[in-house]
Image 1 (tube, one colour):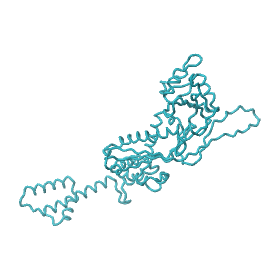
Image 2: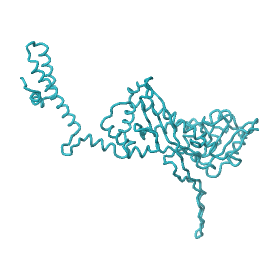
Image 3: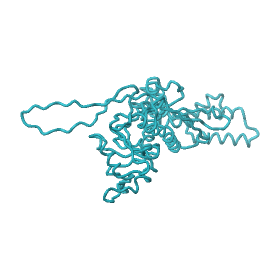
Image 4: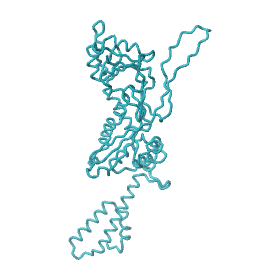
Length: 410
Protein backbone atom coordinates (compact mmCIF):
# COMPACT_ATOMS: atom_id res chain seq x y z
CA UNK A 1 0.00 0.00 0.00
CA UNK A 2 1.39 3.36 -1.04
CA UNK A 3 0.90 6.59 0.89
CA UNK A 4 0.98 10.07 -0.57
CA UNK A 5 2.44 11.70 2.53
CA UNK A 6 3.57 10.99 6.10
CA UNK A 7 0.28 12.16 7.62
CA UNK A 8 -1.66 9.59 5.58
CA UNK A 9 0.68 6.81 6.75
CA UNK A 10 0.43 8.01 10.37
CA UNK A 11 -3.39 8.00 10.27
CA UNK A 12 -3.36 4.48 8.87
CA UNK A 13 -1.13 3.03 11.62
CA UNK A 14 -2.03 5.22 14.62
CA UNK A 15 -4.40 2.61 16.11
CA UNK A 16 -2.05 -0.33 15.52
CA UNK A 17 -0.07 -1.99 18.28
CA UNK A 18 3.64 -1.37 18.75
CA UNK A 19 4.32 -4.98 17.77
CA UNK A 20 2.43 -4.61 14.45
CA UNK A 21 4.20 -1.32 13.68
CA UNK A 22 7.63 -2.83 14.34
CA UNK A 23 6.73 -5.88 12.25
CA UNK A 24 5.75 -3.69 9.26
CA UNK A 25 8.92 -1.59 9.66
CA UNK A 26 11.03 -4.77 9.54
CA UNK A 27 9.23 -5.88 6.38
CA UNK A 28 9.95 -2.53 4.70
CA UNK A 29 13.62 -2.77 5.66
CA UNK A 30 13.78 -6.22 4.12
CA UNK A 31 12.12 -5.01 0.91
CA UNK A 32 14.60 -2.16 0.56
CA UNK A 33 17.53 -4.55 1.06
CA UNK A 34 16.34 -7.30 -1.33
CA UNK A 35 14.09 -5.73 -3.98
CA UNK A 36 16.09 -3.68 -6.49
CA UNK A 37 12.91 -2.33 -8.10
CA UNK A 38 11.23 -1.15 -4.89
CA UNK A 39 9.76 2.35 -4.66
CA UNK A 40 12.22 3.74 -2.10
CA UNK A 41 10.55 7.16 -1.81
CA UNK A 42 7.14 5.66 -1.02
CA UNK A 43 8.62 3.21 1.45
CA UNK A 44 10.48 6.02 3.25
CA UNK A 45 7.21 7.95 3.61
CA UNK A 46 5.63 4.87 5.14
CA UNK A 47 8.60 4.39 7.52
CA UNK A 48 8.31 7.98 8.75
CA UNK A 49 4.60 7.49 9.34
CA UNK A 50 5.29 4.25 11.22
CA UNK A 51 7.85 6.01 13.40
CA UNK A 52 5.43 8.78 14.35
CA UNK A 53 2.61 6.29 14.94
CA UNK A 54 4.79 4.24 17.28
CA UNK A 55 5.74 7.33 19.29
CA UNK A 56 2.07 8.30 19.54
CA UNK A 57 1.04 4.83 20.77
CA UNK A 58 3.80 4.81 23.42
CA UNK A 59 2.88 8.30 24.62
CA UNK A 60 -0.78 7.33 25.01
CA UNK A 61 0.20 4.19 26.92
CA UNK A 62 2.38 6.21 29.29
CA UNK A 63 -0.41 8.72 29.88
CA UNK A 64 -2.88 5.96 30.70
CA UNK A 65 -0.38 4.30 33.06
CA UNK A 66 -0.02 7.60 34.89
CA UNK A 67 -3.80 7.77 35.29
CA UNK A 68 -4.43 10.94 33.29
CA UNK A 69 -7.72 12.61 34.19
CA UNK A 70 -9.08 14.57 31.18
CA UNK A 71 -11.48 16.51 33.43
CA UNK A 72 -8.85 17.94 35.79
CA UNK A 73 -6.07 17.88 33.22
CA UNK A 74 -3.84 16.19 35.85
CA UNK A 75 -2.44 12.69 36.00
CA UNK A 76 -2.61 10.65 39.18
CA UNK A 77 1.20 10.64 39.15
CA UNK A 78 1.29 14.43 39.28
CA UNK A 79 -1.24 14.55 42.08
CA UNK A 80 0.60 11.81 44.01
CA UNK A 81 3.82 13.74 43.52
CA UNK A 82 2.22 16.80 45.07
CA UNK A 83 0.81 14.79 47.95
CA UNK A 84 4.14 13.06 48.57
CA UNK A 85 5.87 16.37 49.22
CA UNK A 86 3.30 17.89 51.55
CA UNK A 87 4.35 18.52 55.15
CA UNK A 88 8.05 18.47 56.06
CA UNK A 89 9.63 17.98 52.65
CA UNK A 90 13.07 17.46 54.18
CA UNK A 91 11.75 14.35 55.95
CA UNK A 92 10.18 12.85 52.81
CA UNK A 93 11.57 9.78 51.10
CA UNK A 94 11.36 11.54 47.73
CA UNK A 95 13.58 14.41 48.85
CA UNK A 96 16.03 12.02 50.46
CA UNK A 97 16.48 10.12 47.20
CA UNK A 98 16.52 13.31 45.12
CA UNK A 99 19.17 14.83 47.38
CA UNK A 100 21.67 12.04 46.80
CA UNK A 101 20.81 11.70 43.11
CA UNK A 102 21.52 15.41 42.62
CA UNK A 103 24.90 15.03 44.31
CA UNK A 104 25.70 12.08 42.04
CA UNK A 105 24.43 13.87 38.93
CA UNK A 106 21.73 11.26 38.28
CA UNK A 107 18.33 11.92 36.71
CA UNK A 108 15.38 12.51 39.04
CA UNK A 109 11.93 10.98 38.70
CA UNK A 110 8.78 13.11 38.72
CA UNK A 111 8.22 12.48 42.42
CA UNK A 112 11.81 13.27 43.34
CA UNK A 113 11.99 16.38 41.20
CA UNK A 114 8.81 17.77 42.75
CA UNK A 115 10.16 17.20 46.26
CA UNK A 116 13.56 18.65 45.43
CA UNK A 117 12.11 21.74 43.76
CA UNK A 118 9.88 22.40 46.73
CA UNK A 119 12.81 21.98 49.12
CA UNK A 120 14.87 24.40 47.08
CA UNK A 121 11.98 26.88 46.93
CA UNK A 122 12.23 30.30 48.51
CA UNK A 123 10.00 29.64 51.53
CA UNK A 124 11.45 26.30 52.67
CA UNK A 125 15.07 26.60 51.58
CA UNK A 126 15.64 30.15 52.81
CA UNK A 127 13.94 29.43 56.11
CA UNK A 128 16.41 26.68 56.89
CA UNK A 129 19.47 28.06 55.16
CA UNK A 130 19.31 31.79 55.89
CA UNK A 131 22.27 31.54 58.27
CA UNK A 132 24.49 30.22 55.49
CA UNK A 133 25.21 33.47 53.71
CA UNK A 134 28.07 31.95 51.69
CA UNK A 135 26.12 29.03 50.28
CA UNK A 136 25.12 29.13 46.62
CA UNK A 137 21.77 28.11 45.21
CA UNK A 138 23.28 24.73 44.34
CA UNK A 139 23.47 23.76 48.01
CA UNK A 140 20.91 21.43 49.54
CA UNK A 141 19.92 20.73 53.12
CA UNK A 142 20.76 17.25 54.39
CA UNK A 143 17.59 15.11 54.61
CA UNK A 144 16.18 14.78 58.11
CA UNK A 145 16.51 10.99 58.20
CA UNK A 146 20.17 11.17 57.14
CA UNK A 147 20.94 13.89 59.69
CA UNK A 148 19.34 11.78 62.41
CA UNK A 149 21.47 8.85 61.29
CA UNK A 150 24.61 10.96 61.48
CA UNK A 151 23.80 12.08 65.03
CA UNK A 152 22.79 8.56 66.03
CA UNK A 153 26.02 7.08 64.73
CA UNK A 154 28.05 9.79 66.44
CA UNK A 155 26.35 8.95 69.72
CA UNK A 156 27.11 5.24 69.36
CA UNK A 157 30.80 6.09 68.97
CA UNK A 158 30.85 7.03 72.66
CA UNK A 159 32.50 10.06 74.23
CA UNK A 160 30.76 13.01 75.81
CA UNK A 161 28.71 13.52 72.65
CA UNK A 162 26.78 10.37 73.56
CA UNK A 163 25.73 11.67 76.98
CA UNK A 164 25.47 15.45 76.52
CA UNK A 165 22.15 17.08 75.73
CA UNK A 166 21.48 17.81 72.07
CA UNK A 167 19.44 20.84 70.98
CA UNK A 168 17.91 21.96 67.71
CA UNK A 169 16.89 25.53 68.53
CA UNK A 170 17.54 28.90 66.83
CA UNK A 171 20.75 30.66 67.80
CA UNK A 172 20.73 33.61 70.23
CA UNK A 173 17.52 32.45 71.93
CA UNK A 174 17.66 31.74 75.68
CA UNK A 175 16.07 28.42 76.62
CA UNK A 176 15.26 27.57 80.26
CA UNK A 177 16.71 24.35 81.65
CA UNK A 178 15.41 23.11 84.98
CA UNK A 179 17.82 22.28 87.81
CA UNK A 180 17.22 19.79 90.63
CA UNK A 181 14.66 20.95 93.21
CA UNK A 182 14.18 19.81 96.76
CA UNK A 183 11.80 16.95 97.43
CA UNK A 184 8.23 17.38 98.60
CA UNK A 185 7.50 17.25 102.34
CA UNK A 186 4.84 15.66 104.48
CA UNK A 187 2.09 18.12 105.25
CA UNK A 188 0.23 18.67 108.48
CA UNK A 189 -3.43 19.23 107.69
CA UNK A 190 -4.51 22.84 108.02
CA UNK A 191 -1.04 24.36 108.17
CA UNK A 192 0.35 26.79 105.59
CA UNK A 193 3.06 25.63 103.20
CA UNK A 194 5.83 27.99 102.16
CA UNK A 195 6.33 28.17 98.42
CA UNK A 196 9.72 27.48 96.90
CA UNK A 197 11.12 29.37 93.95
CA UNK A 198 12.96 27.01 91.66
CA UNK A 199 16.28 28.07 90.22
CA UNK A 200 16.05 27.79 86.45
CA UNK A 201 19.19 27.97 84.32
CA UNK A 202 19.03 29.36 80.79
CA UNK A 203 21.22 28.59 77.82
CA UNK A 204 21.64 30.72 74.68
CA UNK A 205 23.70 29.18 71.90
CA UNK A 206 25.63 31.21 69.34
CA UNK A 207 26.15 30.18 65.73
CA UNK A 208 29.63 29.14 64.61
CA UNK A 209 30.39 27.63 61.22
CA UNK A 210 31.91 24.18 60.77
CA UNK A 211 33.34 23.48 57.31
CA UNK A 212 34.75 20.36 55.71
CA UNK A 213 35.60 19.68 52.05
CA UNK A 214 36.21 16.12 50.89
CA UNK A 215 36.72 14.72 47.39
CA UNK A 216 35.85 11.40 45.80
CA UNK A 217 36.33 9.98 42.33
CA UNK A 218 33.91 10.85 39.56
CA UNK A 219 33.23 7.11 39.37
CA UNK A 220 31.01 7.64 42.42
CA UNK A 221 28.30 8.65 39.95
CA UNK A 222 27.74 4.94 39.39
CA UNK A 223 27.28 4.22 43.09
CA UNK A 224 23.88 3.17 44.38
CA UNK A 225 21.92 5.64 46.50
CA UNK A 226 22.21 3.42 49.58
CA UNK A 227 25.99 3.04 49.20
CA UNK A 228 26.52 6.76 48.65
CA UNK A 229 24.33 7.68 51.61
CA UNK A 230 26.31 5.30 53.81
CA UNK A 231 29.52 6.93 52.63
CA UNK A 232 28.17 10.42 53.34
CA UNK A 233 27.03 9.39 56.83
CA UNK A 234 30.52 8.10 57.62
CA UNK A 235 32.20 11.24 56.31
CA UNK A 236 29.85 13.66 58.06
CA UNK A 237 30.14 11.73 61.32
CA UNK A 238 33.92 11.74 61.13
CA UNK A 239 34.27 15.43 60.28
CA UNK A 240 31.31 17.50 61.49
CA UNK A 241 30.32 15.49 64.55
CA UNK A 242 33.94 14.86 65.58
CA UNK A 243 34.49 18.62 65.50
CA UNK A 244 31.55 19.10 67.85
CA UNK A 245 32.77 16.26 70.09
CA UNK A 246 36.16 17.92 70.46
CA UNK A 247 34.49 21.28 71.08
CA UNK A 248 32.49 19.81 73.97
CA UNK A 249 35.78 19.22 75.78
CA UNK A 250 38.33 21.72 74.50
CA UNK A 251 36.34 24.48 72.74
CA UNK A 252 37.72 27.93 73.50
CA UNK A 253 34.50 29.88 72.94
CA UNK A 254 36.24 32.16 70.42
CA UNK A 255 34.79 31.54 66.95
CA UNK A 256 33.91 28.06 68.18
CA UNK A 257 31.92 26.32 70.88
CA UNK A 258 32.82 26.49 74.56
CA UNK A 259 34.17 23.29 76.07
CA UNK A 260 33.61 22.01 79.56
CA UNK A 261 37.26 22.53 80.53
CA UNK A 262 37.33 26.19 79.45
CA UNK A 263 33.70 27.14 80.08
CA UNK A 264 33.68 26.45 83.80
CA UNK A 265 35.58 28.47 86.41
CA UNK A 266 37.43 25.70 88.23
CA UNK A 267 38.36 26.45 91.84
CA UNK A 268 38.54 24.73 95.23
CA UNK A 269 34.76 24.31 95.33
CA UNK A 270 34.50 22.15 92.21
CA UNK A 271 37.97 20.71 91.56
CA UNK A 272 40.59 18.77 93.44
CA UNK A 273 43.91 17.03 92.82
CA UNK A 274 45.61 13.76 93.70
CA UNK A 275 49.23 13.34 94.75
CA UNK A 276 51.90 14.09 92.16
CA UNK A 277 54.13 11.22 93.30
CA UNK A 278 51.76 9.16 95.43
CA UNK A 279 49.25 8.85 92.60
CA UNK A 280 45.50 8.37 92.72
CA UNK A 281 44.04 6.93 95.93
CA UNK A 282 40.64 5.57 96.89
CA UNK A 283 40.06 8.55 99.17
CA UNK A 284 40.55 10.94 96.20
CA UNK A 285 37.71 9.26 94.30
CA UNK A 286 35.38 9.35 97.28
CA UNK A 287 36.17 13.04 97.77
CA UNK A 288 35.21 13.83 94.17
CA UNK A 289 31.84 12.11 94.53
CA UNK A 290 31.22 14.01 97.76
CA UNK A 291 31.98 17.36 96.09
CA UNK A 292 29.15 17.05 93.57
CA UNK A 293 26.26 19.25 94.68
CA UNK A 294 22.95 17.79 95.75
CA UNK A 295 20.57 16.62 93.05
CA UNK A 296 23.12 16.02 90.30
CA UNK A 297 24.22 12.55 91.40
CA UNK A 298 21.23 10.92 89.72
CA UNK A 299 22.60 10.31 86.24
CA UNK A 300 26.15 11.41 87.11
CA UNK A 301 29.02 9.80 85.20
CA UNK A 302 32.82 9.70 85.16
CA UNK A 303 34.58 10.95 82.01
CA UNK A 304 38.23 10.34 81.09
CA UNK A 305 40.33 9.00 78.26
CA UNK A 306 41.19 5.34 77.84
CA UNK A 307 44.76 5.67 79.14
CA UNK A 308 43.61 7.38 82.33
CA UNK A 309 41.06 4.67 83.05
CA UNK A 310 43.51 1.79 82.81
CA UNK A 311 46.57 3.55 84.23
CA UNK A 312 44.87 5.07 87.29
CA UNK A 313 41.64 3.22 88.04
CA UNK A 314 42.04 -0.33 86.81
CA UNK A 315 44.04 -1.59 89.78
CA UNK A 316 42.66 0.80 92.41
CA UNK A 317 41.00 -0.83 95.44
CA UNK A 318 38.99 0.43 98.39
CA UNK A 319 39.89 0.03 102.09
CA UNK A 320 38.66 -3.57 102.00
CA UNK A 321 40.76 -4.46 98.98
CA UNK A 322 37.87 -4.53 96.52
CA UNK A 323 38.40 -2.92 93.09
CA UNK A 324 36.46 0.32 92.65
CA UNK A 325 36.31 -0.08 88.85
CA UNK A 326 33.89 -2.85 87.90
CA UNK A 327 33.50 -3.88 84.26
CA UNK A 328 29.95 -4.41 83.05
CA UNK A 329 29.96 -6.82 80.08
CA UNK A 330 26.27 -7.66 80.55
CA UNK A 331 25.17 -4.08 79.84
CA UNK A 332 27.83 -3.74 77.10
CA UNK A 333 29.15 -0.58 78.76
CA UNK A 334 32.65 0.39 79.84
CA UNK A 335 31.97 -0.27 83.50
CA UNK A 336 31.37 1.64 86.71
CA UNK A 337 33.49 3.41 89.32
CA UNK A 338 31.89 3.56 92.76
CA UNK A 339 28.58 2.69 91.12
CA UNK A 340 28.68 5.48 88.50
CA UNK A 341 29.07 4.75 84.78
CA UNK A 342 32.29 5.56 82.94
CA UNK A 343 32.42 7.47 79.64
CA UNK A 344 35.59 7.24 77.56
CA UNK A 345 36.44 10.37 75.55
CA UNK A 346 39.91 10.60 74.07
CA UNK A 347 39.50 14.34 73.57
CA UNK A 348 40.24 14.62 77.28
CA UNK A 349 43.93 14.90 78.16
CA UNK A 350 45.72 12.27 80.24
CA UNK A 351 44.98 12.38 83.96
CA UNK A 352 42.08 14.82 83.54
CA UNK A 353 39.01 13.28 85.13
CA UNK A 354 35.52 14.76 85.12
CA UNK A 355 32.59 13.68 87.27
CA UNK A 356 29.12 15.10 86.89
CA UNK A 357 25.74 15.07 85.22
CA UNK A 358 26.48 15.63 81.53
CA UNK A 359 22.86 16.34 80.65
CA UNK A 360 23.80 19.86 81.83
CA UNK A 361 26.36 20.13 79.01
CA UNK A 362 24.75 20.86 75.66
CA UNK A 363 25.37 21.26 71.95
CA UNK A 364 23.14 22.84 69.33
CA UNK A 365 22.77 22.30 65.56
CA UNK A 366 20.00 24.74 64.58
CA UNK A 367 20.14 24.52 60.78
CA UNK A 368 21.09 20.91 60.11
CA UNK A 369 23.95 20.22 57.70
CA UNK A 370 24.14 21.70 54.21
CA UNK A 371 25.95 19.87 51.41
CA UNK A 372 27.33 21.60 48.32
CA UNK A 373 28.89 19.86 45.32
CA UNK A 374 31.45 21.16 42.83
CA UNK A 375 32.65 19.36 39.72
CA UNK A 376 34.89 22.21 38.56
CA UNK A 377 37.33 22.70 41.44
CA UNK A 378 39.05 19.32 40.83
CA UNK A 379 38.73 19.34 37.05
CA UNK A 380 42.31 18.19 36.38
CA UNK A 381 42.21 15.33 38.85
CA UNK A 382 38.81 13.92 37.86
CA UNK A 383 37.44 14.29 41.38
CA UNK A 384 34.17 15.66 42.69
CA UNK A 385 34.35 17.98 45.70
CA UNK A 386 31.71 17.97 48.39
CA UNK A 387 31.51 20.69 51.03
CA UNK A 388 29.71 20.04 54.31
CA UNK A 389 28.78 23.07 56.38
CA UNK A 390 26.94 23.33 59.68
CA UNK A 391 26.22 26.07 62.17
CA UNK A 392 26.72 24.75 65.70
CA UNK A 393 27.67 25.67 69.25
CA UNK A 394 28.26 23.95 72.58
CA UNK A 395 28.66 25.07 76.17
CA UNK A 396 28.12 24.05 79.80
CA UNK A 397 24.58 24.82 80.93
CA UNK A 398 25.02 24.49 84.71
CA UNK A 399 28.57 24.76 86.04
CA UNK A 400 27.79 23.32 89.48
CA UNK A 401 26.87 19.97 87.87
CA UNK A 402 30.54 19.05 87.37
CA UNK A 403 33.66 18.28 89.42
CA UNK A 404 37.21 17.94 88.06
CA UNK A 405 40.07 15.77 89.33
CA UNK A 406 43.66 16.17 88.08
CA UNK A 407 47.19 15.31 89.21
CA UNK A 408 48.86 17.88 91.44
CA UNK A 409 51.70 19.87 89.89
CA UNK A 410 53.78 19.96 93.07
